[in-house]
Length: 145
Length: 163
Image (cartoon, rainbow over all chains, first blue to last red; front, side):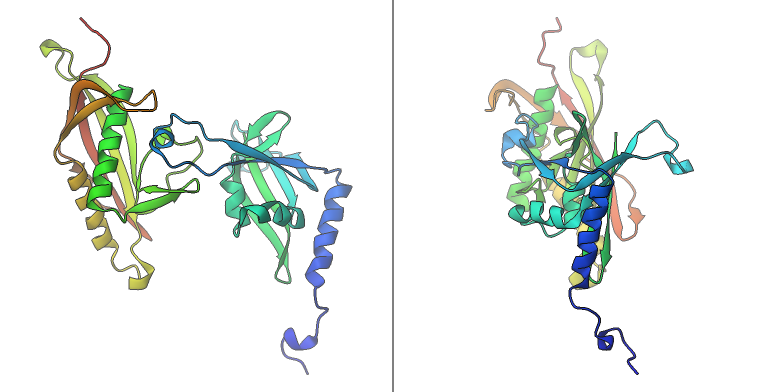
């Protein structure tokens, strides 16, 4: 009798199936693309330290992804701020982050300037990732106005 | 007032490089001395780095209204550490003491030339700023961090003609 998951001989690469399912789910929701604005590395010189030189930024389009407004459901959310839930395809996000040498996608998202949504820049305040069989299939960010 | 803020920061930064050149941080993809003026950073950037000095500028007021145009401005320097993993974080107190020492070293001597940095280069304004010795708050123990604040009053003559 097998006593661990490893010896059950589960299907190798099964995490990719959930990745594709997550992409299909986002497309079914009507999600197309989300623009993420990230800051370019600071020059680190005196002018940037004094806030004289404004940081440059770059827009990255990530698809499939979906933005939807969150309804205040709990006491913690009963304030004047509007929040959006942003669901990113992990596969698309990995591809977008790869050229930048990013290893921690959650930190990369929270460290970004935010998402550009309907012409407004909305900062990302928190990010969680969903994974299955050691593979992430979706990143869910909360953007707060 | 901006020239005072900038001159104070640049003075402390340069002194930090001199007394503790290894105290650096990575911020926005750049390595720099571990001292940051919070109001000069992008909004939403939380001051979360350990072993770094965060400067907050506070109220400004005439120092002695009956005696002239000298003004004073509050500056709070906040910092914290969690020690080193190699030492099981048991050296938090020692690391905090090292940060305290850096503050004392950066603040001495308690004066500096005042320069205008708004054009991208330093232009000597022919005046000086000076400040009080740092006053250290009680240690704040918020596991795994220990930290504190140092308060300094900076004196300066405003750049505008008040006569």
